[in-house]
Image (tube, rainbow, N blue to C red; front, side, top):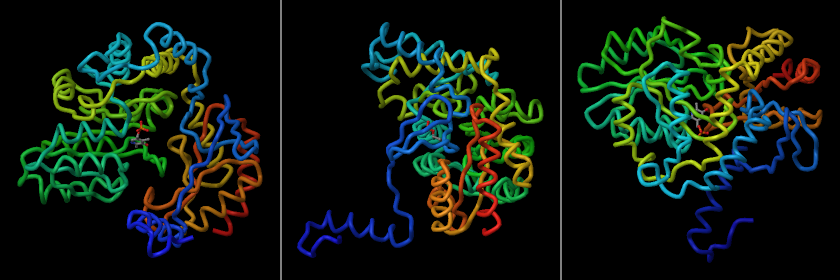
Length: 390
Ligand SMILES: *Cc1c(COP(=O)(O)O)cnc(C)c1O
């Protein structure tokens, strides 16, 4: 399988990298997947019940959302044609940004191409060489990417540990000009909530700017408004970042903040300025989905309730979000468990390094409003032997 020594260096390089991944059970493959409405999924010709989608409310297939997308194509065409600062800012953008600002209770909002693009644009617009970024150690890869791009000094605190965050701020804050504190509102691979009240108190005490990545909060916690709303007045969050690709069922990223901060993004965030605007259909879908989230058109409490049914069946502490991890340790163990669930008709992804730290490979269950209680009961029954073997 390895290319001969005479092969071009590029081919030898790629093959050696892939071989090293294979040797550690970390090589990945992209599996073609046909997601139907609800939780039904067809992969390799097999019908599976998916517990691996972030489409917590089924909005990606909701008839009103799909209709809005089709109408937008009719009216505005399939693509945006340019970046937002040139001619790509079609009229649907202002509507979407007004809804996001209203949901998060901020003066303004700015929509980016994706959540990833949002973080790599926002963070370097807020922090630079003389500044400090203090970040939860489990924060998403795109926050790490944004932090590195910014050129600011970076320090990570132990997961969800405000005391460790305080220690870093006490040691390092005084030597830096500005400081940004970054965390996820709902952790994407662990499903736990960040202690936003404690982090917001620390931000106030040390004059730091707190930003939450609420990718997995919007639509499913805080009455659908996300993790800051969950904590209410106890958490002051000036920077709400998130994505439209999870519970909202569409695509795109956003920042909700004061009017001045949002205007700064429009002037400084390079991933906004130098990248083409989102297709009109995508923006229209997000608007329709947010309307359903805020007007009671979808059961925003259901995904967490389904996750709690699962945790209670498994004898685990109650889920805080629709995400429940099952840490198995080695990559091999997680892959084996995922395969055995697939044989029983369940699609549950194995999550391995570098997505999660070494030695914490896991199954990650994502619950949706569409799951039947009976599906969850069958899942728990199949998982029992795997759990006791772990
Ligand atoms: C998915 C995710 C992102 C990236 O959002 P995309 O819109 O998919 O690029 C960012 N942060 C977290 C925590 C995520 O889970």
